[in-house]
Structures are given as structure tokens and as C-alpha cells.
Amino acid sequence: MTEIVIDPSRSALVAIDLQLRIVGRHAEPHTGADVVRRSAQLAEAFRRTGALVVVVKREWPQDPQPAGSELVDEIAPRDDDLLVTRRGDDAFLDTDLSELLPGRGIETLVITGIDTAAVETTARTAREAGHRLFLPHDATAGENGDAHRLAVQGTLPELGTVCTTDDVLAALTP
Image 1 (tube, rainbow, N blue to C red):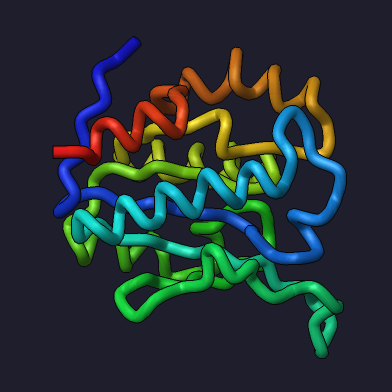
Image 2: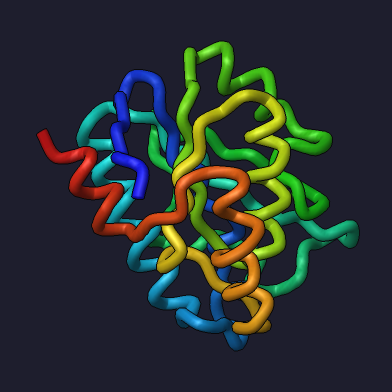
């Protein structure tokens, strides 16, 4: 496995769609609660080291938003975090994320969230933009466990380093 080296001054955690109505759905191979817990652990570690935390929220076309659209408390943005609202699978598409990250000198991304398709789509765009990626498979889940496993074993390794939450936490510990 590739050594995980994370420079907090040039790295960001991107936590995707940790909203009540999404994390409460059936998820495989990890529960929504597991993904929230691991993403929150990573967010705390990133904040503690001064690294950027980007919280991505899905917004639906209707207004008002459906019940449960709010972010879970564990990952709610703090003062120094960025909140990005997306409308499609890709956190970069039709958002200002592609300008915000380079403007802050961000080169490395750790991407977590629900669902696997949104994580994979965002990772593809991030890779094309030249970001180095770490993808903790235990902090990602989707409605279809087989599709998640296929992504973890096939697609995601082509985009970045598939790892665990503990691997990233260890890289952030001085």
C-alpha cells in the first residue's frame, strides 16, 4: 500500500451528504451511523491539525427542502470549515469547490460520505484536477453493497489510495 502522508496545510477532508435523511437509509457495507462516526473522527483530527474540512450538502430541487435534509450534528460545519451545496452527484459540478481548494493551496483530499457514487464521482473530478486522493473505504457506504465493493476494489484504486479511517488518523498524528 502507498504510504499515507498528509500535510495539514495542503490537505482537506471532504465529507459528502451526511444528512439525516441520507444516513438514515439502508447502507452497505457500513451503516450510515458508522460512516458518520468515522467521518466525524476524521473531521476532528483535521481540525486539530489545522487542516481544512469541507462539508458537502445535497440540495433537492424542491423548496422547502424535504424533511431530514439538515446535516447530522456530528459533522455540522464549524467556523473554519467550508460548506458546499451540491445538486448532482459531483461536489465540484456547479459549485465553487474547484476555485476554493486551489485558492487555499489544497493538493490532497480525503473523501468520505454516503453514497459511494457521489464519493466516486467527486473523486474522479478531483483526480482530473490534479488532487492527490485518499479514500477511506470504511467511511463510505451506499445502498448497494456489491456496487460499493466493486468501486473499492476496481474504480477507486485507479483514482487514489484506498485506505481505512485509522490509516488517515495515523498519518495525522505527529
